[in-house]
Amino acid sequence: MYPEAAEGGGSFRSAASSGPGCAWESAGSDSTADAARRARGKVRRYCAANGLNRLGTLTYRGEGCHEPTMLRRDVGRFFRGLRSEVGEPFPYVWTPEWHPGGHGLHVHFAVGRYIGQGVIRETWGRGHVFIKLLGNLPVGSGVRGEARLAARYLAKYVGKDLGTGEPGGLHRYEVAQGFQPKRVTLDGATADEVLGWAASVIGAAPEYVWRSRDEEDWAGPPAVWASWT
Image (cartoon, rainbow, N blue to C red):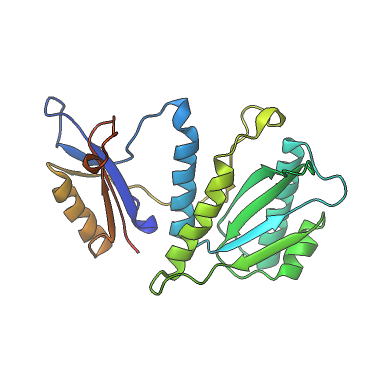
């Protein structure tokens, strides 16, 4: 589980394997087909753990940018400039998207602190910028709920195929280093036992629990996932 992100998931080992029956680690396979799903999960946990509840967009003026490598270089300079303006490192996540109108690439990003739009515009210096604090969520959602909403928005672009314009080896998203949530492994003989251990780590019962047994078409090993507000 990831206590800082207030979520965790795991799958069961068979009785023939060594150790307890349920390990609270990452569930699922490591196949290439799961790359987008894993990326979305990492973005969700990163956003939730760091309270990234402000969404922004960076675009290029004129004919735009059509080179992914150039985009990453420009965005790297942008966040280094923001870090200089802020005066200290801060967590962020960003992902590229091809503009549907053929204008090239633009950037969606999330941060967890106030940064004036004027500062963002001047630091970017290549076109239009936009940023907003997410709100209008149900009472009790808090910063973590806002951050998860930001992650759901970014997930649409993290999972998109960037096509032939994307050189091999470039990531679907980038984050500030040093702010990744830490993983904690919990073991138990049953899912309920592991959920109990997880609740003791967080200090409360989970708000939401998903169990694979409730899915008619589930083909993987028995699994469970839970989240807290």
